[in-house]
Length: 498
Ligand SMILES: [Zn+2]
Image (cartoon, rainbow, N blue to C red; front, side):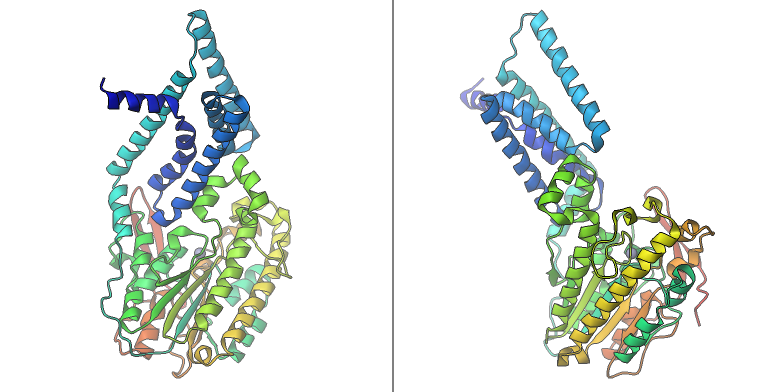
């Protein structure tokens, strides 16, 4: 072996790298396994590496050997990632048994266990893990996907500096039901809120629907002004479709700057916006990595937003701020503000504080309360949310740019059909498509149909305000049928279509 090889071997035997590899591997594996943006990877990767390095340094000081310190740090790194006491006990038992067996065999055969050999075994296993991860990344096209994302630039070369139209602000309230559904499902009268919107100059569409039952498909079709079956769509590519929305490029061509907030769900974040309004709150990828783990429970004391309910509320309040900021811009602005409420979990009580612990749950199946208790809390949250919407719009209307602007208040889909079951009835699937839609379109008579559907939001707006002649799409509703690696969109007639 030459000198360089010997130095490399000494490095591998001497520097325990494996605690860092063990800590960062889950982040890399999650990125490989799911269609998430590369932008969400650096922070958890850095945090994981920093935690592992910190633990290694502390254990080294305590145990007065970096090799023993690394073994302890690796064990702690694994324990921090464990979900629940049961898993922690199993892992501890397994680790202790393996250690005991190795020690017994070594003792019986008269071999001394040297620190350097433990470190070199740990490092070798760690590096192998990285090599396998890398090979998987190449095999699954992750490298190409990442490079394409890093190299992605706006398709628009020249931007019209002349102002073509007023600013457009879209407030997307996730899963906000239409008034008739709120009435029949929650016995909630939303008329006072809708009347206040009308007083602010809005027109409320009474029979509006989303064309799709989930955020990702609604948003992709809204931003492309097309139905999903007309788009180049493969499994897992809605996130990329959302980034390349044709409506965004068309607006840019007409001199608009695109502003968007970052919602908690990475797959529907419009990261390609010219200005991304960032809160810095944990992403859903980080939430997924931390949820239920020992590290997650500890992190909550330092960063309150690690708690899902606090995070949901934080994203909502921050979204309102993003909208207000965008509305104060005097240059032509197209802003898209996606608030995660009233989609579950419930994030607010009537006064805007956190609702009780028993009301938590990311979906209906996770709710552990009677329907009436949930409905009470839901109505309280809606009162608070409605008040925040109205006060934000009041604030927008105090400026000249705000008064001239188009404002759309809409939802991407309705409530979960499972709520009817919680209520003791049968699910009504078409309720999932019954959405809130209110538009304030100064300077032109209300261009939207009373049975407006989401796919046509931008074609109708652009045809009214810019010199475009975009095709108005049929008001068909589509149910996605997700197979292995494919999605088929099955048509359903829209009962509200004119
Ligand atoms: Zn949604």
